[in-house]
Image (cartoon, rainbow, N blue to C red; front, side, top):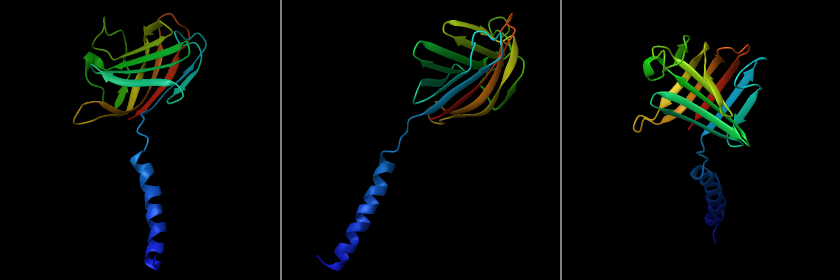
Length: 165
């Protein structure tokens, strides 16, 4: 071997070490649901923090309704955010909420916890970021928060949802 070959071997090895991780970069979606509660909150009665990959957190947009759900063991949380008249969500704040079955003109926040749920009678939500793949229309990113209080409950819950594909 000559000097050039000996000098080229460490360079080639370094390139291989640096290039291989990029080829196998983790493309797992990152998702989280964080919820805080006040006494008397329903259906969520205690704080929740679920984040992938430790817990299963799924975020999707179907029929212009953002759905975030998470589970750990026997616990389950689901949150649905819907714009007025079922319009696609856009960045901004949605202050007027209600049950979309009786008031489709209002935005809605539905929270489900372990099989119990209700639409917010008071509250709203803010979409900080929502992005879709332009070629497939699949949701690729979401950041937002919501406030939710069911009819008859004395407390409320506040949640944050984050997703990046």
